[in-house]
Image (cartoon, rainbow, N blue to C red; front, top):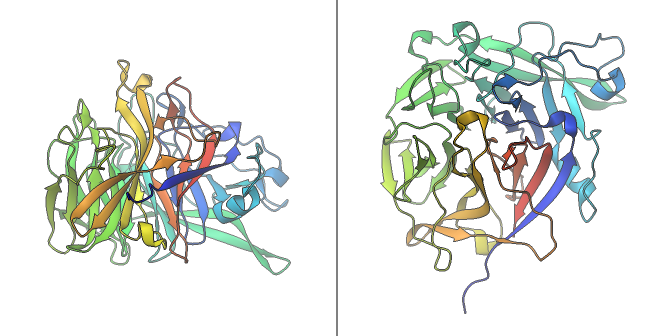
Amino acid sequence: MAAARPIARWTLLSKAIGKARSSHCAAITDNGICLIYGGELKPREPVDTAPLTLSEEQIKVPATNSIPSIKGCVHAFDFGYGIARNAGQTPIDRTDNWQILPPAAGPAPLPRVGATAVWSAKDKHFYMWGGRGGVDMAPVGAEELGVWKGSLTHTNEGGTAQLASIRWEKVTAKNEGEAPESRSYHASVALNGKVYIHAGCPEKGRLSTLYSFDVETLSWKLLAPGPEPGRGGTTLAAASLKEHGDVLLRFGGFAGHELPTDLSLDIYIITEDVWRTVVPVPDPEFRRPGPRSVHGFTSFRSKSPALSDAVAVLYHGEGEASDLGHAGAGNFYNDVWLLLDSAGGLAWKKVSNGESGEAIPEGRGWFPSVSWVKENRETTVVLFGGLLTSNERSDELWALQIE
């Protein structure tokens, strides 16, 4: 008898009109606070550029503070609380699950699109890098390009710590001259105290380079480039494989066409500074995921014995680009796949939707890949915003759990 197929359980946690965007940054803290920065509501126009119109109560800053400019603000959602609150209920359509974290005194990054952000478990900070700054879609200049480090600050109200603001710092690397070329729509991931930056779009063309930034030594290192062609809109997932130990997994991207054309997967082996290309074993029934870009691909772990070999999850993304380029919406997938590290090597397993009538998100692309692995080893995948086939930006926040 064939093994039961894993099932995707989607939960809509929030639908907040003021949050709609694509091409934004997202990361999630160790304790499940989802942090959103930047993006666009209209093509090539960074969001969060106007002064806030929210009340002090809505923004949740002390009444003694003046209402800040939105520049440098981060939108925060308590994921653990949101999931518990919505369990078994109709999804709520309110904004009070969100908090806007204003920047503390000091510098703050300009709004941008196509940047990336990660949460570093090593030092408990939010790191943002790269992006484009405006209608001309040129990558941000030297004054904005550096690593931006965000520290979450708290107040203590009634003996309980409450998120209050984000303190930005533009980090100067010890070897700043060896920093990556300015780019956007690249991929990044944090692992073991390093932030990895890969591929993306400079002012012209597409890149395949890979760099690491050490958050302790504040130094850049140029690593082996990924297999060609250079690409934008690709993704990296950190994983630990039986054969290679800690690795970065790469799937998809756009190089004038959707990748991979040969359905391959690229593996960067960290200890050897080399890439390997493999073709995972297909799902016996559904074969392999199709070529795509600006999709979700992130780490996955489960305590379920049936899913113990799962190392990453692939979801949604653009399967066919728009004739209008960045100004239009292509055709999007709404599928979910697990990548397994089994005895026979890497293999794909298609994930089924839940029972008929269960809510699932509309297919989309141009959103960041984010997942949260709780202490019990269960992974929750975050899907926030993104571009829909209608060429509208989504305002939805979804949680995906696989069982």
